[in-house]
Structures are given as C-alpha cells and as structure tokens.
Amino acid sequence: MPAQINREGSVIVVKPVGPMIAAELEELDRQLQDIFSGWTPRIVVNLSEVPFIDSAGLELLCRCRNLLGERGLSMKLCLVNEMTRQILELTRLTQRFDIYPDVIAAVRSFL
Image 1: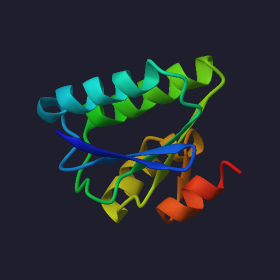
Image 2 (image 1 turned 60 degrees about the vertical axis):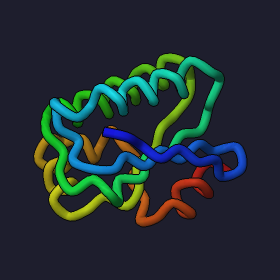
Image 3 (image 1 turned 45 degrees about the vertical axis):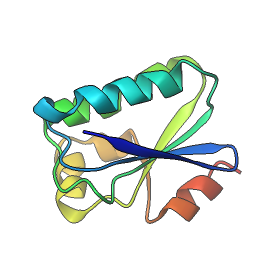
Image 4 (image 1 turned 180 degrees about the horizontal axis):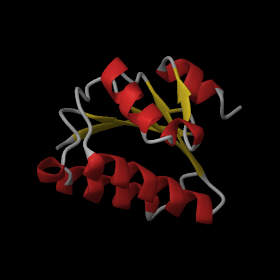
C-alpha cells in the first residue's frame, strides 16, 4: 500500500491509499519507518483514501503512535470514514488517537 507524503509547514501529512489490511501494509510501514527515523515531531495520517482497516492496520497505527509517544512526539488522524470510525470506537482506540475532521484542523492542532 503506497502512501502520499506531503509537508504542511512543519507537519508531515501521510495519506495511505487503499485498504489498510495485512497483505498491503509492508510499503506503508517502510514509509512510516523512514519518516520516524528523522526528528519529525508532527505527523498527521489522512485516512480519506482508506476504505477499510483490519487488525493489522490498527496494530500499525498503534505501534506508530506508541513509538512516537516514547520519543515525546505525536501523531494525529483525520478524515476517518464512518466504517473506520466505528472500528476505532469498537476497539476503544478513539480514546488513544486525536481525530480531526480535515487535514487543516489536524495540522492547526499542533500550533
């Protein structure tokens, strides 16, 4: 699963394209690890092009959040579709992630 990576000022916006499922996560995981290897304190994951997320996708998001948290950094989510939001709610992960309605709100939340 490829991801588009853009900079919005000092914030890196990662936009995965396609379902976040086990068989598709290797490329996204590699891209995220490349981002995390640098000192990037502000990351937004735009989920607008993710129609579905499975347990492996949730695990990747949680692992990234925890890795960043250990370094005093943070990651926020935005543009979560209804199905993904329900999955996040059922797994109680909405309590662990800051979720915003759009990229601009997520980027501005770092200010």
